[in-house]
Image (cartoon, rainbow, N blue to C red; front, side):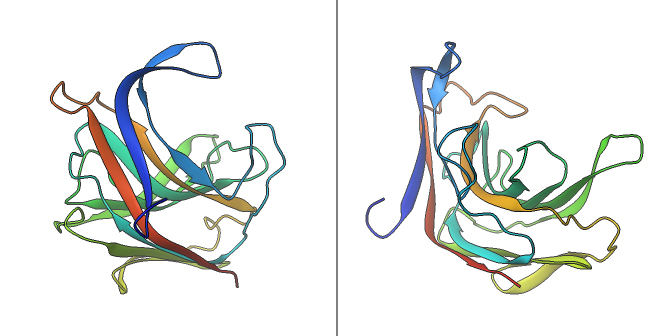
Length: 190
């Protein structure tokens, strides 16, 4: 925290994980969930309006920043509600919902919105999760809606903001550090 923002920074430096392995990067995550992986969830939500003012990383290659909801009881997905994902991009944002098919497979639907300069300043990414529909907003404008009540999750979830590294592709050698900034986060439960 500093200068009025939360900054999650990914640094290329050898870091020993809690599992004893050494990883080439260190990064950050904040959650309303728990203090440790097996801890008791602190704040969980079922339904509500979730919003955050986010400035995407200037160097997005190999990065996967996300603002999302994950089941609080297990942290296993699906279901999963992705309010905003920036997969190797600061020009497009992915808005998705995941659910489990009858065969047990992870199925998802959503949209990609852009192009826009999401690294040039703060943008507000929001999602309204109701029992019969989920609606996504970018800067106050509706960008996607799923209105099949049979697919809408109804389990308590925890809120997560993270800056993951290496999803789908490793960062290029030219990137050693990048940051995701968050000016504010709000949750209004229905």
